[in-house]
Image 1 (cartoon, helix red, strand yellow):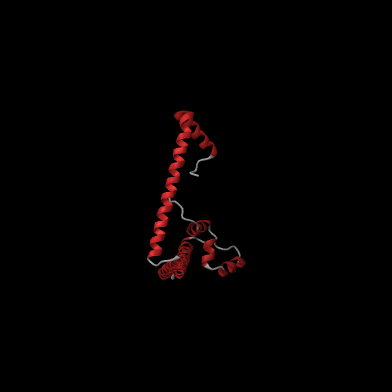
Image 2 (tube, rainbow, N blue to C red):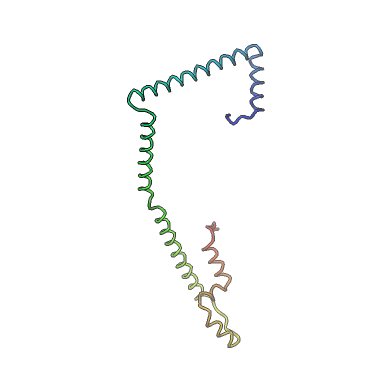
Length: 160
């Protein structure tokens, strides 16, 4: 009903019974019932008057449904004209963001790779392996760079 449960209704009825007494409660209920009936009759009369006015002006149920469907179709057309290109716009924006993030990621990797010292390989085989690894991958192997990259790729974090 109005978010009121059965126990709450019983409690309210108990309070009303205590306030007004057992003699007046039936009279009040009868008066409220008559008032509700009058309200229902008044709304039905208003509906009937509106329906008569509509029929007198030449509108019947079919004409009204045609009119509302025409209005709905015009609203949908206007909405599609206004919002028709939204998915392509958002996909373009997301691809732009993705490319900018990848550029920033490679720039950071390049900066940290130049700042990070790579220890000299002990053997010739290790030296060959180091030559085969690109500079960006070498930078990724340092813990500080991994932390920076995770901060860039992860959700927005609070600073401080």
